[in-house]
Structures are given as C-alpha cells and as structure tokens.
Image (cartoon, rainbow, N blue to C red):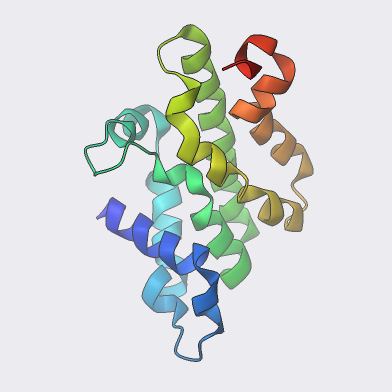
Length: 156
C-alpha cells in the first residue's frame, strides 16, 4: 500500500495542470484531509526502507520518499507546516546518510539521479515555509551540495 499512496500523492501533486480542472478532487489523490501524505511521512524510515526502494523491486531503483511530494501537498493544500517539517527533516537526514554511503563507496552518486532532480522540488515549498536553515542543510548533503565542497565528487 505504501507505494500506491506514494504514487497517488506524487501524480496528484507534481502534475499540477490537473489542479486547474474543476473536477480536481484533492481528497481522491491525497486521502481525507491529506491522510496519504501524512501516513507516507510517518511510516518512512531510511534505515528500513531505503535499500529496498533502491533495489528496484518496485520497478524502478528510486526512493520515492525523497521526491518532496508529500510535504508539498501538506503545505500547499492543507497548510500543515508542522508535518511537512517532519518530512523535510527525514529527507535532510536521509541525504546525510546517502552522502555517507557514497563517501564510503557503498553506493555511487550516479545511483541518485532521480532523487537529486526531485530534491529541487523542495526549494519552493521550504522557502514558502520559511525553512531556509533546513533547506541549506538538506541541500548540503545532495550531490550538488557535496560537489561544491569536494572537487573529487564534482568530477564524477
């Protein structure tokens, strides 16, 4: 069920042209009162979930929790900054763990292309929520942030 709610929230949020349709029903995509993104954020645990997501067993080797769709929905459709912050904190911690995995050689930065592109989706919503310190921390652990500090990574 987790992958189903992640996909529903992702498509409902990231394909924003559907928001302009009079038939758009946020509860259909996001559950009653935003139940799907709240549950996705609450249940995500990097240490338990990340390796399975990256294994490709779901059809794609990507960690969909890192895409910022859950947090965006809660902020933009429900005004729930508190739960969005919990999600951003989990993502910042996850990026720090990914940096350690890549630095140790256990994983490679090029395995995180999807996640890196989607990290940019956090920019607008985190700024709207006045989370500049967390945004800076978050992005300091992405490939782009690490590459700014480490020439070896920048060459990858």
